[in-house]
Image 1 (cartoon, rainbow, N blue to C red):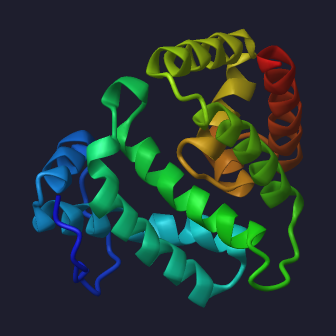
Image 2 (cartoon, rainbow, N blue to C red; image 1 turned 30 degrees about the vertical axis):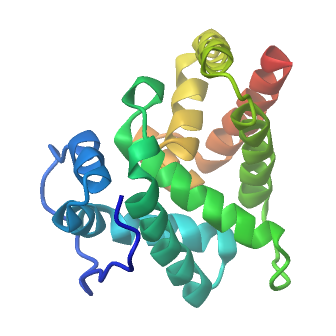
Length: 200
């Protein structure tokens, strides 16, 4: 697979379409199609910058995270497995992981708020599962996670998925679900606690 640096377009505007095929774009990236990477960049860069900024709290560092995320997307697109999740979710996971690693690295002092602390805690749990070497065992673990998610009340489950799959802030989730912000935070906190107990 090509690994040379990729020139990304300057624009951060997203395409005005809800039918973007992330899985196809990632397959094309894996095949060395630079246009596919640029299409993903135009579609998601602004949103991914927001995700990174909420975690690292500094615009320059967030921009660096997004740049590194697109380098990882380009070089690791071949590792994306549609059987394990959506293409968009994978792209957001790449970005969140890099942002959380930047916070963990101690490159600078970071004032971590409750939302970021929860994201770090959740990411630690996900990292533990990512260390499972055997693909079958990984699928079993993901099956357990899906089973645990299915046991949550729909409202709490949706809030967790919006936060950790779609990369939404608590405020965005409150707006999306027409639910008070405090309720959203409580649902996510309790829901993550329930998931941890279920997965233990």
